[in-house]
Each structure stands twice: as C-alpha cells, then as structure tokens.
Image (cartoon, rainbow, N blue to C red; front, side, top):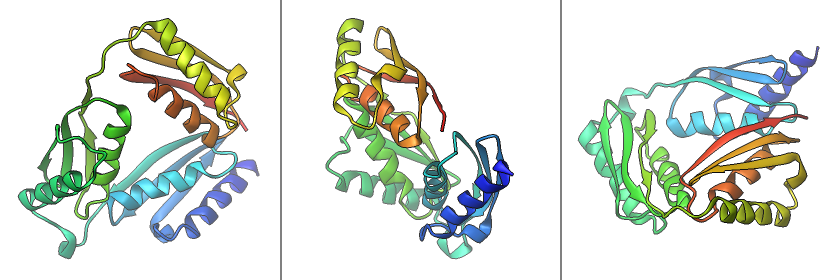
Length: 216
C-alpha cells in the first residue's frame, strides 16, 4: 500500500508539472526508491521530471530511466547544436569563457575549467536548456587551490548552522585534501540539496562525495 501511495503521489506531481508530459512517463516505487521510465521530448523535460519526483514526500532515491527522443523537426546537426550551446554559454555572465563544448549525435560534452562549482552548475543548466540536446556530459574541471581540511570543515559547519533547512547535528563531514565526504541522515531532498550546496560553496572544494541518506 505504501508503494502504491508513493507511486500515485509522484504521478500526481508529474501531472501538475507543466514542463513535463506525464503521459509519457511510467512510475514505479519500491520502499522509497522511485524509478522513472519512458521517452520524453527534450533533455530539459527529463531533468524537470527528476526534479519533480524528488519534491514528493517519501522519495529517498530516484532512478532515472528516461530517454530523450526528438521529433524530426527538432533535430539539429552537431555543428548547429554546438553553435547554439556556445552562444547560450557566452550570453550567461555566470559561465566563464574557459568552458567549451563539443557535440556528437546530440550529446553535449562540456569541457574546460571553472574557478567555482556554481559556474560549472550554471554551464550544465544553460546547456541542458538548449533545444536539440539529447544528453549532457560534464567534464569541466575546477581549478581552485586546496585549503586545509580544518578550514573546509569549519566553513561547511558554519554554512549548515546558518541554513535553517539543515540539521547540522545529523550530518558528518570528512575531508581529504579538497574532497569532501558528507554522510548522515536528512528528512527531505530540500535538506539534502541544501547540505550538498553548502559543501560545494566552501573555498577550495573540487568534489563532494554524497553519502547522505534521505529518511522521511
């Protein structure tokens, strides 16, 4: 019964998400883990379906089995798509000019480097919104100096304390050079994402190992 209720709640959330064609998506739920299957019309729609699913109370993991299939009228050759992606990246002031893109069969690979993770995230968001993108591969590297582990832990703990959405006592922080590992339990995906964003915002962090468990 709990699985059926969760499946129904996710289907309802997808139905009321205007950027998603819910009729194209099949939903399965198993003990808090939700699997999405089907074919959608754009990479952005696929991303929005996953985000909508994470908003549902009771979801602790999402398996994205969605595929993007473009209509013939929406297909673009690789050179045209690359030009459109580069134009979009160039027009966004948050994306540094050091980020480049290459395209093969509709799959966009972002390359280059950025000083901060929020810039890399912005590049992924912008590129994923370009019509014609089927898949996105992020290979952008971060090029910030390595701080001391103590500094990283201090910064993240302060960020957790400031954010009312995060229970700092429920999470543990481990650092290995400029890689941060977060573990523990949170009550929602909102709290999970807030904790991950806080870790990424710490100066010098180049990777975050997410071991946080969402428990409702």
